[in-house]
Length: 244
Length: 251
Image (tube, rainbow over all chains, first blue to last red):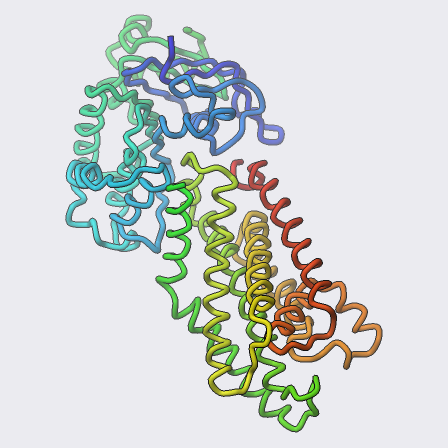
């Protein structure tokens, strides 16, 4: 069976730092999966090797069955990534950014979907504004739209709600939940554990480059007799327990 | 092909949106060189028989403007994207390294050729410059801008800060283009400097281009074509290999 995301034995080293140590992880199609961990645990590194922004030292990563190194074209067509950093192209308007991103993926006549994205992310009145003129929250919405512009079946959100207001969170989660109900697979990293608890059916926790917990949200809570994922997370960080 | 065409369009759009800086500014600075040097050197004996100093100077200045702007286009686009972080928008797509290379080089060529055309036409309006061998002229313009665009990609990949890019511009491109025979024939140089000029690839670009316009040059255009074409192929191959490796881009 093809998994939405398949990660086997992935290693990544930066000089003396072993950022990822033999990471194994699968995310099934249609899942809403949370990848949690403290700062520096390796979440973004894992996303970067999955997205082809960085090369793994060892191991295999697949998106919808496509190897991200050998079959990178097909893998990237199936993957949409919202990066953690608030990046934008200062030469472009919002609409130009989305039209160009469609074009990079070889998609023509994507106007209807772009309008849908602008509408769902409440960007219609900003569509012809230059990216430089947008607030941080608006730029974050454009980043999300850019990641979705080619309708990828697998969507990776790397801390999408970091430092953004309540309104955007509501808009974002409503839209992402809709996409998940339509069949898109979602991988989310966040430091807002209540969001992960509410949204995600399964959780993986990274610590110092290793998966130290991987189970359904329900089982993780039951295993620690807790009502709060935050308590479970803190306990796992303290004892480093492996609950695969 | 749509992905490649889109990236090419975006790279052209990027410089066109700031055409005051990317097209008009080089035109003004080049015309200032032309104005000053053609006036100061108006009593200078003809460099080649029947060729005034202004007519000699225009091909050199045109080629200098073309290679400087082709280099600036690909290098500044890449380094800006890296510093701003928006390079991910290209790196996350299914675009191959060859498509990325092609789009950046072609956009650099478009800017170089556009600036060169504007500079040449303006000079041609005010001074009597012949176009004796148009095919040679176009050949050297195309290959030289491709070579510079490719070199710009390498520099843009290598540089991680704007000052590193400025070092390329000020310590590599500017001296090599100024000391390439743009303002003089290398036959007027002392033997040591004339021989040294032969190691400067920009000399062959300018000399070949000048042959196309004036029908006279310091060396055979075939020799220049061999060297410029060979350098262009070698540099393109190197740039493609670097892009394929992901060095300083996918790390």
